[in-house]
Amino acid sequence: MTLNLRLTVGLCLAFSLCAALAVPGNFPGLSGTARLTLAVFALATCLWIATPIDDTYIALGAGLALTVTGVISSDTFFGTLGDSTVWLLICAFVLAAAVSRTGLAGRAAAFLVGGARTVRQLTHLTTAALVVTAFAVPATSGRAALALPVFLALAKVLSGHRRLVVMLALLFPTVILLSAVATLIGAGAHLITVSVLWETTGERVGFTQWLLIGLPLAIASSHLAAEVVLLTTTRRADRKLPVEISADDIQEHTEQPVTGPWSAAESRCALLLATVVMLWCSEPLHQVPPALVALIGAVVASSPALGTVHLKDALKTVPWSLLLFMAATMAMGVALSDSGAAKWLVSGLPAGVGPEVFLAVVVLISTAAHLVLQSRSARSSVLVPLVVAAAVGVGVNPVAAALASTAAAGFCHTLPASAKPVALFADVPGVATYAPRDLLRLSAFLAPLTALLVFGFAVVVWPVMGVPLR
Image 1 (cartoon, rainbow, N blue to C red):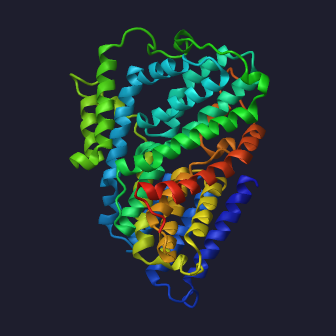
Image 2 (cartoon, rainbow, N blue to C red):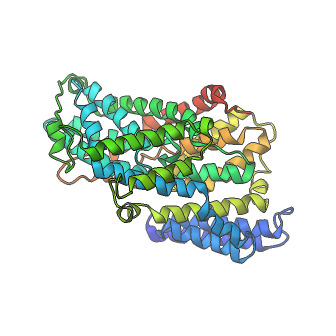
Image 3 (tube, rainbow, N blue to C red):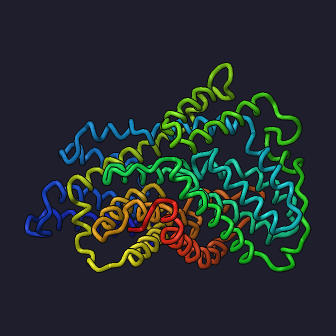
């Protein structure tokens, strides 16, 4: 479908829905504010799907429309920018800038990958290294950029084996996307989910709880994906090849040192990062909020005496557009909940649907949603408020349903345009990577497997960790 046709169809659908909602006789039981909220929500969703307009611009327009019309107050709209999750993400990016400046990530990758002696070892050690980066860099696109020099070094060493290079090119974005669920700061969509749950149900999912729920899933899905990538892109003869990667090979593609003694800046940054992560993980013991811990870490990381990056330079790495998008979509979620629109949308669901069936439908829809909504944050903004409202209606724990939806929505590998890391590794200058058909073949196997894994964790594993299905 061409862009103009998508735009025309999307706008026609949006305005048709708005017109239907404007007729008083239609949709009995729907209040005026709920009608207005649904009209704005439908229009924003159609614009996200069908137009090239910036997602943040659409979200801000929708939030402004809801504020001007009185559906939500201006305090609510502007107050979302002061939410603790927004501050957590800002400070996490400052910490990530400090880590990137010192080259700690490259040194850690060289250490792990250098121990590989077979192709399978290389695949799983690379996977482990990429999972660890979820604690240091709070955005999948940032992690992809950080990992690119390591991929270039590996591609150079294995340049005579095309299938192995293609395998690695697929492995990097695949693991980066699936392992984001390991931490609360792994993706902006996670913070949107947490905010929606807090605003609609009063349930606060903290860093530690998310870690207990998300890290095992991230490890399992990442290593499962690594095997799928390995088996779908290589032959047995490729997997038997000996591998030897040295730190010098990686050093050629990065400016920061990955060998030799640690500098004082690297040691300070490593100690600071370890302290911040430890304090995040031990929140139930000391009761200091993660955002406050992150702020302390960011101040130390950018301080003149102990820091490794200037605050001005670190703030330039913060994705302010994403933060505005999050704030605006949080306001949209509040409007959907407070106006009764979300409850009305799901009121027609069959009452006899079992929790397992409901969860299976949520996971399937969330897994396939990237084919329609390319922005991960936009997917959570659209799906999570509806999933939470529907879960309450059918007797499912809204926290389990929202987390399952968010985790399943992390799969976005079908097309090069489905996610920024996929697009980045699809076009690496000087290296022949994968073609669209390689992504389609991988997705045919990986999509059902990851959906089943998320479903299995939600039904079997998460209840043991304090998130029951009912």
